Amino acid sequence: MSFDRSIKIAPSILSADFANFGQEIRAIEAEGADWVHVDVMDGHFVPNLTFGPAAVKAFRPHVKTVMDVHLMIAPVDPYIDAYADAGADVLTAHVEAGPHIHRTLQAIRGAGMKAGVALNPGTPAEAVAHLLDLTDLICVMTVNPGFGGQKFIDMTAKIRSLREMIGDRPVHIEIDGGVDPSTAPLVVEAGADVLVAGSAVFRGGSVDAPQVYGENIRKIREAASTA
Ligand SMILES: O=C(CO)[C@@H](O)[C@H](O)COP(=O)(O)O
Image 1: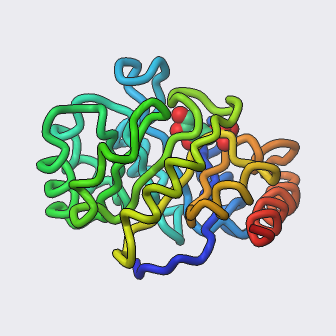
Image 2 (image 1 turned 180 degrees about the horizontal axis):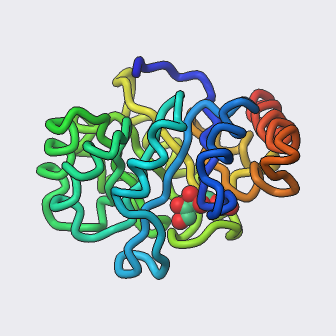
Image 3 (image 1 turned 90 degrees about the vertical axis):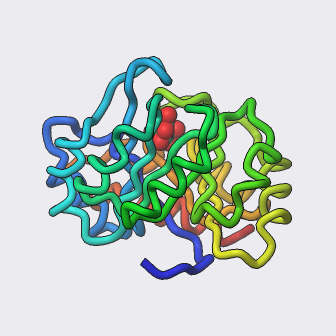
């Protein structure tokens, strides 16, 4: 997985048909998704439950692009090897999820994955200032994590601070929550390059009408390109 700052659309399969993940993943990739975003929730760090490592491993053969796994779990460290074995390309842990985030990021890289660190809306950019050489991606949450379809919280000032802190390091800024054609230009203009979108991609489509996913992805990409 090489680094580049072009805009990447990463549909969150939290908004896909839960009875049909293989086909859904193949449909979004065929319709222009750059990455596939997988939201892992534990019912403890966030008030919702989704996928364990066995489910993520079952997604892997369907993902031809980048499998971007976002852990909304605590603790993280006991599960890193399981998600490496499941085939995650990027594994992101929350800075709020435990006291030893350096160890977590080192262990993620040590297991052969790109290491991401996520920040809840209430966590300032400075919380990751000391982690910039240990991380490949900073995920800025623009909703409180746990559910798709929530209203975008404006984090553009935080994104700008992060972009300045990152300088010329090869670190992605990913935005997660409430991304759609109206919010995408704001976050891209502030410095984001990876846009996670769940409801704005899957809304109105299905595996029988995958062209709707394509139209939705194109609308987000076009809006982002106006930034
Ligand atoms: O991590 C999360 C929610 O916690 C996200 O990935 C959502 O799945 C994004 O959904 P939309 O806000 O785009 O509907």
